[in-house]
Image 1: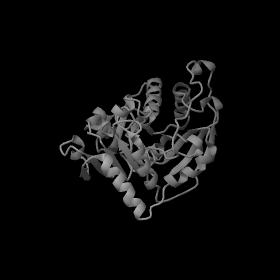
Image 2 (image 1 turned 60 degrees about the horizontal axis):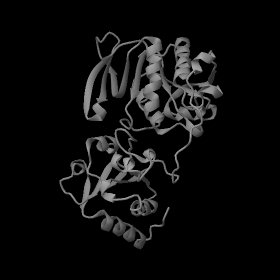
Image 3 (image 1 turned 90 degrees about the vertical axis):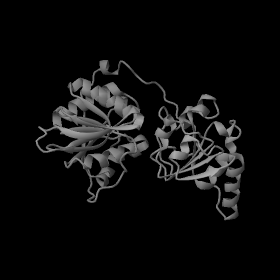
Image 4 (image 1 turned 180 degrees about the vertical axis):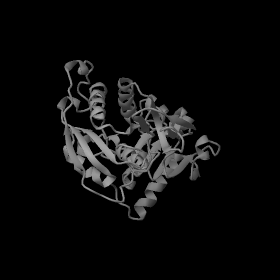
Length: 327
């Protein structure tokens, strides 16, 4: 590809998030220099050289802190016209898809969402051959992407975040877009962070999930005890959050979070396709269920057929016996 690939990087708290690092790793596969655009995160911009970023364009505007898809899209469009990238890539999160949709509409270009691979093909006329997830990841679609620049979002956890072989210090280039007040006619007022135990579901290496079989919000204490021993995060299925046993921010699935831990322990979860979409990127899945024919058994690497209220405390007890300390 001619021209750099511009990657939208989200850096809450000053550190690029996991999905942004996945998008940077994907961008390097396009065989072009990689640039980044960040909003008000100059400190973390210098660290992006480890992921192959040559130039980090930093938009320093307090009004763009947090969710602001429309004015951020205006800023990206202005940056595109200034630096002429060959492609613009963002994470395939809700925010990333929304933001790039605004960019596509303003540029009058097509956009491909949830891409997992892209390559130039001989005699393609400058098009990219894509593979992307459809129907919540239940099928893969081969497609061609036209447009200049190419606009894509990367399916969450479809690409492992890997540092570049050659690490350099990214050049930080301040960018000041021309934003009038009309761009801010829709605003997000105070954002309340979800209460967490300190371990994010999105970043946890081990996740303990509970479903209908847990039985009640109080019974989740058994899962929380196991999670504390493993340094894990606790999540739940849609049924659990709909019942009010866990907050919606703990939901794993198509309409919740998509996780990619090293180990996912699914307790009392039948495994509807909507839930499998959220956990299938886990490296290993251990299912604990009384039903040997539950759908989750089809994707589980290991299974314990039994009552989770007997199995989970037994696992915790054995971990303590072996000297595994809580936390």
